[in-house]
Image (cartoon, one colour):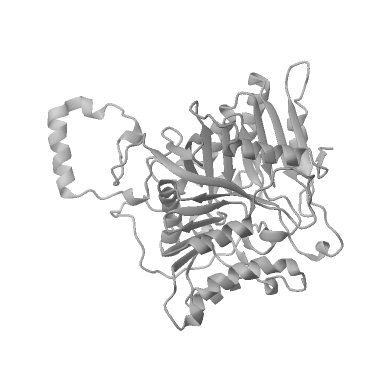
Length: 482
C-alpha cells in the first residue's frame, strides 16, 4: 500500500556494521596525534585559527576528486501509470518502474542495496485480490529470491535490505522469505526507538555503486501497475551513486544498532556535495547540471548533507517564474501526532513566492478514498490568495486516478503517489509526502538537479519533468479544487 502511518516498536539484533567513532559523551574521538598537531597549530596561528571558515572546505573527503570536476551521468525519468489511466497520443511517456527495476537487476554484478518502507510484491500479500496486475511484482520478487538459489549455493550478488520495522499491518513476509532462502540480508529500523514516531519512508535501490533508482515507488506490486509513481533511474553515475549509498549506509547502521540514540556520523558518512557545493554533472551527454542529494530527518543528515526541507525551500525560493508541485498529501501541519501542530515552512515559502515575487504556483494534489477532507481547508486558504489585480497566481487541482468495479477491491491502490517539484531552473524528485512529519521524524531522500547557464539542449530532464506535470495538469483526471 502507498502509505502506512505509524509502526510498533520492535527491537533489532546487533550485528557487525561500520560504526561511528565515539567517546562516552558521543563526540568523535580524535587520535592523539591530531590533538598534538592542533595544539602546535594554535601556538603558531593564534586567534586567526578561530576565524569562521566555510564548513564544507573543512572536510575534503578521501577520494581526491576536485569539487569542480564534472561527472558523466545517465539519468531518466521512470513512471508507473496505473492500468486504465490513459493519455492522448503523443503525450510524454517514459520508462516504466517495472522496466527500470528489471534493468537494475540485469546490470547488478556484485551488490544491490534496497531501502524500503514495506514489502508486498506477491499477490498473496493482498488477500482476496485476484488480478493479473500482480504479475510484475511477482516477477521482481522471483528474481530477488533466485539470488539465493533456494539456499543451496552462495548468492549471485550481495543483497542488503534496510526496511522500516515490521508490524501487524505490514509484516514484511517477503523479506522473511528472502532472508530464509539466503537471498538477502535484512535489517529493520525502529524509528519510534530513535524519534518517538516515524518510519523509514525512503524508496531506494543502489546497484554496484554505479546505478540507482530513487522515487515514490514502494516494494509493492501495486506500485508497478495500480498506483501512479514517479522516480529516476540513474545509470553509469558512480560519484552520485556513491553519495546516495552513504545515506543507505546510515540506515544499515541503525538497523544493526542497539542504542536508542542517533550517533555522530563519522567521516565515512559525510559528503562534499550539497546545496552550497553541488556536484557538477554532464547529464545524458547533453545537459550540464548541478546536483546533490538531501535527506530527512535532520539527525540523519551527516556532516555536509543538506536537509531535505532546506532543499525544498531553496528550490521554491530560487524560482523565478513558476513552481509546479505534484504530491500525494499536502498539509502545513504535523499530522501523525495525537495533537496536530502548525508547520508552516513550505506553505509560507509558496505564499512569499507568489505574493512577493509574482511566481506562478501550481499544486497537483491527489484525491482518493483515503484522503482526509480537512486537507481542503489548507489548500483553499492557499488558493484564496490568488488575485489577478495583485498579480498573485496560485492554482490547485486534485488528481483522481479512475477506478472500475474490480479495481475498487484492490486495497490502497488507484492513487497518484508522485512526490516531485519542477521550476524554471530545478527538478526535485523525492520520497516524502509534504506534511511536517516527513521532515521531522521520517526518513526520506530528495534528488535536486539544477540546470546551469552551460545547458544548450532544450530537451532536458527538467523539461521532461515539466512536460509530465503539464500532461497531468491538463488531463481529464485533474479537477479544480472545490
